[in-house]
Image (cartoon, rainbow, N blue to C red; front, side):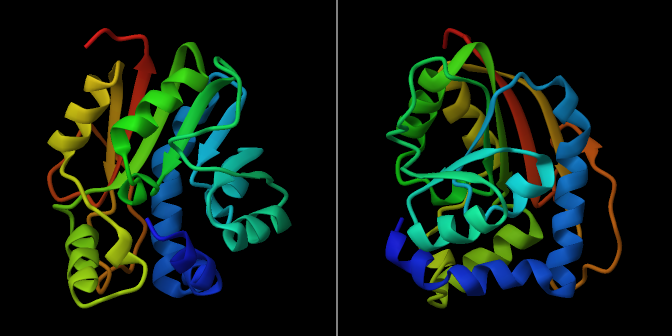
Length: 217
């Protein structure tokens, strides 16, 4: 991932959430995550906090990101920010009850190293919430096309299928306990709210995996 790109594009990235399609997609995504919050052990950490949109909306107080300009915007939203990468988190082992990856998975340079580091900072039986953009959904396909056309942000991304994310997650010592799917409308057709569906549903663009630490692969 190019940190410089995210520093340069921070305001552009953040403004998307204020556009009509961005506001609606964001609310659809939040509806998939909010119902599980009460069952998630604290304290919470968001890895790849970006400009703090998710953290602010979900009540996540601490976030890390390698992009300084992104962190500046997140700090304005009241998030305690630390500049760091997912592969090298500046926290003691067992410091957190839940770690969130919220549309960060696509930008991880080394997903397996990141998963192992997240496992390290989680308490025993801690939880990982990984909300990723599925490559087989309409948004994933759209972003892949943009990347191929040279889009500055999506050119830095790698999109995965559900099966790939599950394999990597379980291979790094997590047990998947819950999956939620949503955002079936595409970027150019989104016009109404959606309710999340349980399990992995083909065609979903936004998939949330809840995984428990401590599984022996």
